[in-house]
Length: 529
Picture 1 (cartoon, rainbow, N blue to C red):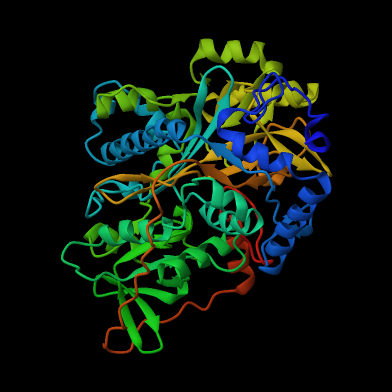
Picture 2 (cartoon, one colour; picture 1 turned 45 degrees about the vertical axis):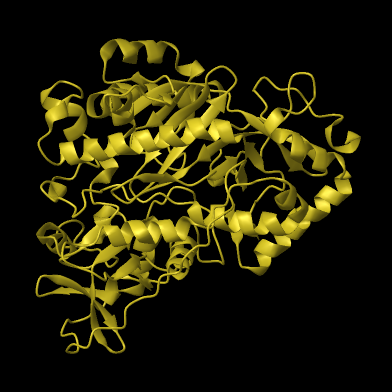
């Protein structure tokens, strides 16, 4: 114990394991006791076992051009069961409100007419796609999978940092982290009631199956990937394998007779549900980018006619817009007649003149973010920015106030993290994943905890040298056995008559690498989320 914690510093941020007196908080007592029985060398040995396990599986991380073992920290995050019973309903509530918002803005736009959100905010979003207007999913679900990023501080508990309802990545690491940690700390998994995560693929497949077009009894589900060069390819292949469905690229699909088909060695086979991991712009070259090799011509026509379901729905990105984010509490009240369970981080809307002037006066105190950014790109932390950076930012904010929001610098909570041979506090966030099958929203117990490994760093993204932790939610029943669903046999129909696209491999690789999946880990040399 002394080797690990005797020099553990008390920082300004709230620490999730260690209280102000140097003892452990209630949820962490079991873990704290286990760590107290290990020397620094023993804990380091277990960390090295974790790294070797990931390296053997090809799970590596590209940082500054160097391939490293995936940065999974040996100390997990622990969430008490009663605390999770606050977080999970809050995430589910937010998903339900965003579902209602998307159905509304691509339909009657009642919230705009009623003054809940300005029309200018919606239509000026780069991710509001008019091509998605009027497309009604068979079971009404547009957000089949979501990742809601949360942070925690000492005063106000959990807050929502941002919403991810386009093609959120990272759940593969929740599954992989859990398997690796169960092998590294078997005694803790035997002693603690840690809620399982292995049910996720079954839940996802059930939601995708429920989203099939009307009249389809045994739908064919596929996972559409941009290809092996994409940063999230590992996740795509893992989820397809665990669900027992085909992993396809755009060139494997074609549209004919008003339907989507998949090429197989036994002829063509009808496709009913596409879990797409291709960004909107590349999905259908007829409607969006005409130089795209990653999608398939005609997909949007089939989606509009109701013969195929695209999950997540095209156009969901308007709900990810960080300016729209500021209106979500009002949208929850409007659509659900409920008070928000999880609060937003305080945010300035820079399109409002008074807010813009206040932010410009306090630019060196605040965090400024582009409204359509992801993975920490474009973010400026005022207290760490140089004078020249702040001067350039000031010009950009005046030129395009709609394109930015500002927030206070939030001291993200810290968790002990193994740095060298010592445990040190490092800042973290949490991305819980939710699956909507049209009847209920299932929130996976835990989620992806990202940790900023450099000392004092607040940006947890891997591009800044971040890593991850397994997330243990305590309590709950014995886990149910996951059911693996088999695929149908290929339909016996005529050989497909479509002409394959003769694409330039270099162009394809460039497009695949342009896909923005949020996390920028690399797995097996080919990518991950």
